[in-house]
Image 1 (tube, rainbow, N blue to C red):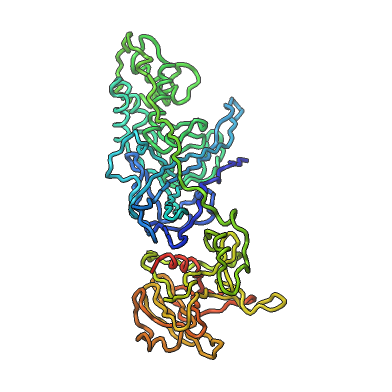
Image 2 (image 1 turned 60 degrees about the horizontal axis):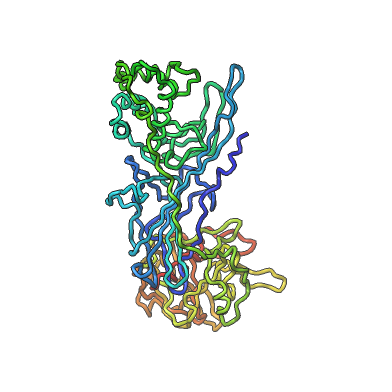
Length: 587
């Protein structure tokens, strides 16, 4: 059974640090979703489904133009440039013949895995920039005239304060078939100056016979002669065509040990490779005083893998009967023809060295910081621990066995407001647990923190929101524009004051501003059903001295509870990521 070891070894996902010490960097215009399951970090996404960042190498063999729009906080890219990096990887898996078959004895095949990768690095001095600007002429000398595809990761980074900020998104890059005319024109450009006879011979092979990219998934193939199903890890649509025995692209290149990214993804390079193979077959089948047509028939047959020298096969006959094959002359090849010069190999594009990526020393939580649960004193954050942590990883999805979805907004970060106007020194603190297992939480303020903990370790309920630091009578604002859809008594403060819940329906979900004063509608002159603008004052903090922030799916108008032995609230969303993003908005 084929194992295809390494078939799921994909691109390493970089660390993500969106904000640090008042500075921020984030990609805004591209889809931030990971590829769908069964993809996991570091694997190879093979299903047709992806996120919306799908683009193609053009029919002219040019990389797709990628427009990038970043939001920056606390610095200007003209002072501290944005570094960008595009990594691509296509892990091609097929079978390779290792023993030729004989009469009554089938050939032997083994599974082979070939990673095909490339990388580009550059800088930008504006938050909006283009990678592979199609309006800019391409110069071969600078290496920009090469192409690659597959799964891609686009990373941006900046270093405004001596520490790196970094963000990334996933992309998929496919290929567009060039079409017969482009193939014919390229063959003519490559060998037309040598001999028109060569042009006709090569047109008969490449102009009509093959393709470079498959428009459908490539999952398996049944070889009729063997009656065997060859099954391999799937390739999504618009990836390089490859037969079960590593016949890749126009030239049906069959040597996985010599297969390069360019041969698989650049149809021009694939043609050069195929032409060079055909030239070798022409040299091996040359006979003195032969005609161009007879020479072509022998060379075509040899190109298709004939074992006996100068034997003419059905493949050769079929090429000779094609429209282009009939144009090959029946005249004799001149005796003074310098065969070696005529059939000198075309130059292949050299494999460029990988560019240097300057980002280094960017730690991930998993390997650089230890678990700091319950390490904060009653006064809040311990500054020594804050310095030790340095940077925080993404929030952990909770609970791990069946996590709540994160509340996700399509509004740009720069258009969102932090929900509380306060002078509290911890105003932007978001309590949460990181993917690395670090709990940044003084008093169970985080989402799904445990409340009413008893001496035996049991507890009464889960905290279904996040408590934000504030002072009594601090003003609360709308994070985004929306409609106030509910306002009702929520929770009694220790002072005896009844606090209220304000439900604000924004574009992508509903926010519960919990523990507000009951006179907020009168104070800020609104009523249920009113629309409010982003940043508009909508309430003020009750005697609890904090804002309890919850998020729910659209249409929700009442808060939900979550008990250890109770059912999972059906409409609840995790607000952690959203609040971390709002903290970086500087609004």
